[in-house]
Image (cartoon, rainbow, N blue to C red; front, side):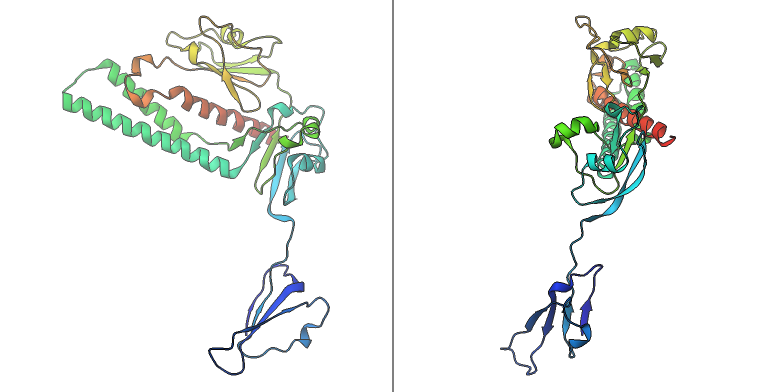
Amino acid sequence: MRCGCYIRPDLSTVELAREPAEQTATLPLSRTLLDLRSRNFAAVRLSPRDAVRLPRGFGDRDTGPVTLIGEFLRPGVYDIRRGERLSEVIARAGGLTPQAYPYGAVFSRESVRLRQQEGFQRTARELEQGLMQVAAGQAVAGMRGSTDLSGAIQAGQALANSLRQARAAGRMVVEANPVVLAGRPDLDVLMEPGDLVAMPKRPNEVTVVGAVLNPGSLQFATGWKAGDYVRGAGGEQRFADGRRAFVVLPNGQSAPAGLGAWQSGGPPIPPGSTVVVPQDPSPYETWGFLRDVTQVLSQVALSSAALAVIVRSSGR
């Protein structure tokens, strides 16, 4: 007799397979479905070589918990059922505190984090391969003392190293405001085991990083645009590229900062944003491995901002 048992079996459809008493090739196995909910197990007589299959019963509980940290009335770890949505878990946690800032909520998923981390490593490898190709080409051509090429290689090495050390946050851009979700159920994301939701307090600062004279955080001012905060940080450095500057919004999206000569500085920036001013890559654009510097910086800045929110929220 063979018996395969699973956690929480469905006793209503137990399958009993029995070989015929006469060993002939023409007689198939006999299969019987038993409902063991209404009869005694001991009443079922088994014979040698019988096979009993107990199918797994359906359960709506998923295979792992989710974690809520920060400005929830009852933060903690919650088991979820299949098909449970973000608004339902927030309701189970008692809702949000009056200080919560749902526009800046960070929703982190492990599968997304793994893909982002691999993307960082892949980009670092591509940069290093580009560096090797350029260095090899220089050696073949007998080029020596090229200042521009030396600077490009150093910039590429620094960027590759920063990518290898960067930590992906696995952030997904989601709507986390229960009021909005009540009216827009199509935005209510399905939860998965291992998900993390960090709900920050409403911030009162905007951070400026990159090629500015005094990087750091400035107090939020109503109506201020990216250009105002860059000036508050001392202005752009000599080799800054204001045309490619961008803003990491509190919800994880990014948008152009509008710092170009013919631009007005973009729309007003909400609190909790980060303004990123990259260096001007034009001296190195002839080398293909530095053409997507702004995109790489954007990915790293998004992850850094998300991780900062998670760290602050976990200390509540």
